[in-house]
Structure formats: structure tokens, C-alpha cells
Length: 506
Image (cartoon, rainbow, N blue to C red; front, side, top):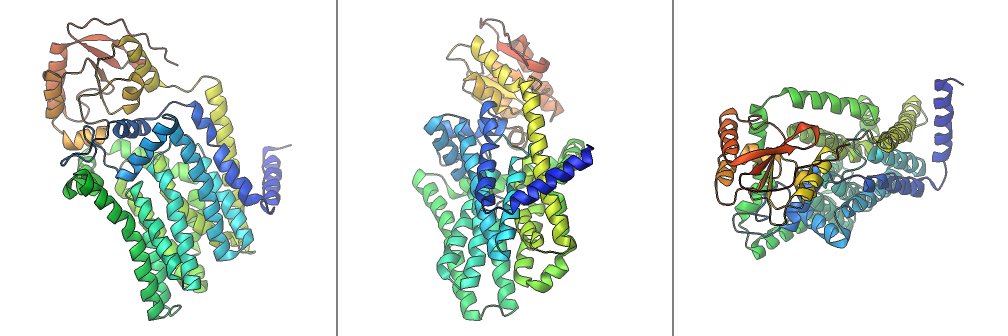
């Protein structure tokens, strides 16, 4: 049997399965279970950073989180803190799996309100495939993934509020839309969708002026609740509002300038890879199909089409503005993909058939990539350099030791179990707020110099002059104590005796 016939048979079986009334709950269960293998993998860099910030959270007037700096909203750090307190660092991955399952259910509900049960079932399969595809990320959990159910809920509730002219539903839609940016600032798509939906509805006389005013007021009131709660918490905790603003929004402007001034080769390559991964996961094809057929969709339902297109444009713009183009930047596009799929799969025409075929392909892609990922890990081919280096340092260190990782690898820091006297756990905040490395140089030269210093990237990677000054100081105050995985140099403070490093690198 040829590979093409195998794929055709698999596609027909999936298509037949999708017609089952159990499709939505089974897709939600699959989305949950297919992310469970992530519990076997070490904590990743961003997860580790959020955990370290959460564990040391001590709000100050001039620092949102105390010792460490991170450009994320308080809600995200609070969730990481709660998950860690509940059952340890990997608990956040269980929450991420639950978020994916909930997202599938919400996307199906949204699709059902737009186009009926068949659309709901296909959309559920589509979203389950997107959130479990290892091409994007089926392991790590960050703000993008945790906030998506709130964006999707905002879209569903906005549609329901418009259909029923119900202000309470508009209030809930605004509330969900306002909560989502509390996990990641660019997850404001729910607000965009709701706003454009209502504006086009009144412009096309689908609703009258009085209903428009009621729904808009209710939606804005709901969206204001999370904002007001965050401001109230900030004031109660003694954090100045300008400090809150800079950490959540202002820093991104400064960071964008740093990224623009840096080497563009790596971001460009990641952007091209991102396009390839979006294509392989089926996301680009579904969104492209919607764009191609947007005129005919507009003719059928102007408000929904305009709102979906506005959501897509907003999320793509936010992705491009992010600058770094990491794989999980694709997650915020899932709600727009779900809406596009819901509108396209309902049709009996070639357009609908093509979209359903793409959804089948997305499901097969997710399954194939997951099998490959499992086999790769089972064969011991997956490297865990950061984890293994951190564990080696933990084995050689004393309890009172401290560590700084140059290069922003918070996972090394977390696995070492050591505190850091330096406030930056990520490279981008370091490059933005300590561009000349003066702060790090002062730490290394001062009485609180770290016992251990890992040179994860060369000291001169981002600033040659500052890096050379730092290197000279390190060579004067430290001795090379061995290497971690992949030849990363590990320095030990002069005069300190510690056992040699013995990393068990995969």
C-alpha cells in the first residue's frame, strides 16, 4: 500500500470520526492528554524564570516583583506562584493542558453559534491539533497558552451578546477579553473582535443605536474590571503606577529598539522557520483560505467577517512587532484560526472540502510529529544541556552559594537551586536595562559577587566593550572550574574550594 493511499484512508477515518456526536469532548480530552508527555521533560527557560520571579515576589515602589525583573503582568506570575505552591514546578503544565482542553470546548461553542454542529466538530479537531503539535510547542506553558481560553470565550460571548442583545453577556465578554492580557500583553484580540463586531453591526444596521450603546457600555465595564483590579492591587502593594506601567508596557518599547539595533540574521531565520512551522501545522493554510475567500464571507455576514479579519490582523501585527519570532508566538493566532475554520468548514462547496482536508492534515501532522517527538526522546536523542548543567552545579555547590548565568538561562538557575545576586534572568531585559553591563560588572566586582558564574554565551555577544570589561574582571576574580554541557564555561570565585563539575550530559 502506497503512502498516499495510507494518508487517504487515515483522512477518511478522521473525517468519519469527526461526524460523531462525541467529537468535541474527545477532541478536548485528546488536547489534554497529548500534552501530558510534557510532564516528563525538565522546566524550560521561560517557565523557570517565571517560577523564580514568583518565588521571590516582593513588590516595591520601584520594582513590581522585587529583586528580579520581568516584563509580564502580575496575573501570570500569580498563576505560576499558585501552581508551584500547589504541587511544584511542573504543575503549570497540567494547567496548560487544561487550558488547551477548555480552548477546544470554547472554540467548538463559538463555531456552533456561527455555523452549527458540524462546524463545531471540525473546529474542535482543528484547535486540538494546533495546541498539541510539537512543531509549535506541546511541552512548555507560558502566558500565550494560559490566556487563549479567555480570548476564545470573549469571542463566543460577544457573538451571543449580539445575537440576543444581552448586556450581561456583553459584560462577561468584556471581562474575559480584559483578563486575557493579564497573561500576555498582546492577547487583546478578544477586545478587538468584540469592538469590531459591534461597530460593524451598528454600521450595517444589524443593531440599533440604543442596543449598541447598551452592549458597548456593558462590554467596556467588563473589560475595566481586570484593569481596575490590577491597579488596586498595585496601589495596595505599594507599587507606583509608573512602575507597573513600565514593567507591563513601557519596557516593550525600549526592548524593540534594542532588537532593531541588534543582529537581524537570527530573528530573520526564526521568522522564516515560523512561517514553515505554521504551514506544517496547517494554520497558515486555514488562515490563508479565509483571506482568499474574505469577500464572499463578507457578503454573507459582514460583522463576523470583519471581526475575524480584525482579530487576525491584530494578532499578526503583534507577532511581527514581537521581534524575536519564537515558536510559541503562533499560539495567539489559534482563536483567529478557529474562527476562520468555523466559517469555512461549514460549506458543502470546494471551499469547505478543502478546509476539512486541511483540518485532517493538521490532525495527522500533530499525530506524526508527536510520535516522532516521543521516539526521539525515548531514544535519548533529546539534549537537556541547561538542566544537566544546573544539576551538576547543584551537586558541587554549597547551600549558601550564589550563581549568575550570563545569557539568560533561568532553567540553569532553577536546577542549580542557587540564588542570584543579579536581577536579570533573561537576556533581553539585560540587553535593554543593562546594555553596557555596568550593573553586572558592579555585582561581579562587589562584596555580593556570585560564587558561580556560567558563561552560557560569550561575554562579548551583545556589547563588545562592556563584555571585554566583564571578561577581564571575571578572569581576575574567578578561576575556570570546568565546563557544563556543550562546552559552556563555568567560573568559580577565587579562594573558594568546590568539587569538580561532573555534568551527565545527554
